[in-house]
Structure formats: structure tokens, C-alpha cells
Length: 502
Image (cartoon, rainbow, N blue to C red):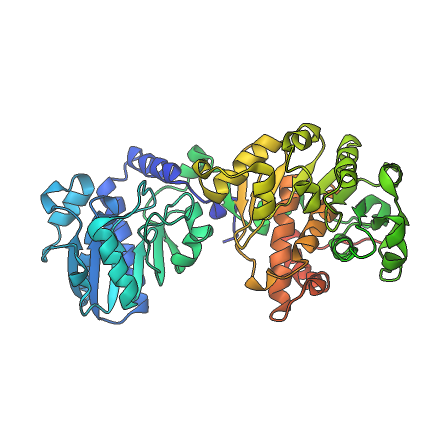
């Protein structure tokens, strides 16, 4: 079956609750959902572990109810199950109480002692909606599990991981496997939750797929299916002038590398023409090291304004290697006033650290901001109350009126209208100097070809990760543009063939 955008949806805690309610309202009993969840977890364990001694840790809510179900199915399959409950059994309510009644074995109080001799731990203490730090017996038991190093299977999320943010609330143990239901949560895609979850398996428990039509999710895990309809296709009559003309601003003679990396990336991703606009002292340096990329002098504000005056030069990248100067600030405002599609990175963002509202007020045309965490903090500040990386990116995009691409191993792309995509394919080898310049080049190259900012940013991030994966170990930024064709060949299976000429 072909993948769809709904397959990539990441549901918040509130949205998952709505999915459960949707199912119940259409005749799927809550106990049926819980039975299906616990059985699914037991089935995933049976696939991976032979019969062994299992400690099942149950919390006082629905995650604990799932744990009671899993314990029953594991015991029936021949596993030696020891179950511990946080709180009193007679305090359980609803479906969790029903499932506790169906468990015929002993129920121990939750202490680290329940882990003694266990070969496997099932973590059903807390679910994705955890609202306060793990403490007391639960924290002590999770700490003991961490110290023992016994494999852990988590129900929904590892206890202590907040499902909307991926952040750790007090303490959370590393899971070897996490079994979640219907759709993943943002916390499965955002660090540190992504790492702590281990392998994540999503199981169907009887929630109708139509629940997504009611929920209308706005957060997704990045994949070509989300933006392939917007991917620029070449018609047989295409030529370079129809594929857009990118202008990349360069720094001074000793700071041209970032612009060259970005320019080649923009050209490789499909822009028809790319020009590096250089200060006079950098012109010779750039000209000696580029071929298909063009260069021209652009001294001072007047020179830059002239460099982007041609309406065919429809997309501009500013920031990499430009310096935190009054000139950089003026060039950004000039580009935004010219109505070009604009990508702002690095120094083009940091230069507005003291007066960010000047930047936001100037944004009226298609614009993508590509900060790393340090640049983000300088421009947008830090507010721990906005809900983790995803919440920060969303709030920033709304404030700026631009797409925000907040970089990292779990890059978040957020649009002013609240849509967000979390990227998952970036290998650790991208943590190398210049890789962000290449990413900015990919973004502006796609903007030049007419992709909307949100889709262009998502596609660029995915291609960036795919190119790094294709190259493998030993990657440096200079390798990314040459590795891009392998990623584009893979992508062509998604978007179909195209043709064109110079």
C-alpha cells in the first residue's frame, strides 16, 4: 500500500485523546482498545524475546491498564511474569480497573526489588501525557532499571518522556523497544525522547483511520509524500531561465567558503543559474574556485541592490560568512523590500539580535529562516513555557511571519499557520563545519524553482539528510553537493521523471 501523508502524522497527547474518543463514540469500547494495546505489546515481545522472566511495571492510569493486559498475555505464552503496581489496586478506576480484575497473578507494590532476577522489563508506569516530574517509588524503580541495564519495553513512550516535546520529566530509562498505538507522538521524533524510545513500533488497536479527518493533525514526520506534489518538475521545453536564478551573498576575501558551498548546493538541487555577489576584495578568490556558478562584484549596499535588481534573479540567500555588520543588516532589508524569495541564515539572523522586530516587520515575501539553536536564542529568545523545540519553532514562525527551520538532529520546520514537520533522516555525520551552509543553499535553490517556503524547507532538509546517508562515513560539507544526485535519484521514484535542456 502506498504511503500517504496521514501515515506520517504525529499526534499530540490531546489529539490522541480525541482519537480514542472518536473510536469510542463509534462503538469501539474502551476496554477493547486497551485489550488490543496490551495484546499488541505482548505480541511484539514474543517476536523478539524467548520465554524469560519479565517484570511488568504498572502505573495508576491507562498505561498501567495496558500493562495488566500485556502481563496476562505474556503469562499465557509461558513467560514468568512478576507485576508491580504504583499505588493501590483498589484505587484503579475505569478500564484499568477492569483489566486489573482480569489479572489472576499477584500484584506487588512498586519498588526496585521487583526487578530482581528480571530478564526483561515492561514499562507501563506513565504515558505520553505526563504533566509533572517522575518522583518517589517510580523514580527509584526507573533509576534501578537504568543501573541494572536490563532490556526495557515501553508502552506508548518511556515513562518520564513527555509525548508532545520528547523532554524528560525527572527521569526516564532507555528502552530497547517502544510500542505505541494508532500514530506516533512528536516525542517519538524529538530528542531526547527519540533516542530513549529505541525502536518504535506503531500498532493498530481498532481506532478508525477516519479519526484523522476529524482531528486534522498539523504535525508530521518528514517524508517526500508530504511535499512531492510541490516538487519542481521539468517539462521538455524547460530551460535554465525558467528554473530560477539564485543570488548568494559572499563575505570578504577570507570568508567565501560558506557562500561557495551554498551556491553549489543551490545549483545541484536544480536552480537554473546561481550567482555569488561578492565584495570587491573577494571577487578574485571566488572566481578562481567556481565554474558553473557565476560571480560578480557587489560592493556595499548599492552594489548588492544592483546585483538583485534583475527580476529574473528571484531568490536570494544572505548570511553565510557575511559578518555581523551594518552592511549585512542593510542587505537583508533590501532583499526583503525587493519582494524576492529569501532565505536568511547565520549572520543574517544574528545581526538582528538586538532588534528582531525590525526583521519581522520587513518580511512580506516568501521567506525561510534557518537558525541553529544559538542563533534562534539570539533572535527569538528562550521561553521554556512554550512547549519544547516544536512549540518554540511554531511560536517563532508565527511571530516572524516566515517559515522557521530550526536545525539539529531533529530539525523542525514550522509555518506561520501552525503546520510543522519534524525531520528524522539526518545522520550524525552532518555535525561538521559548513553543512548548514549547504542546507541553506538547498532551500534557496528550491525557492528559486517556485516551491513554497514550507515545502521547500522540508524537502531541503530531507535531501540534506539523504545525501549525507548516501555518502556515508568521512563526510565533510564539500561532499554533500556531489552526494546529492544519489538522493535525487531516490526521490525520482517518488516524484516521477523529468527532462529539460539548457
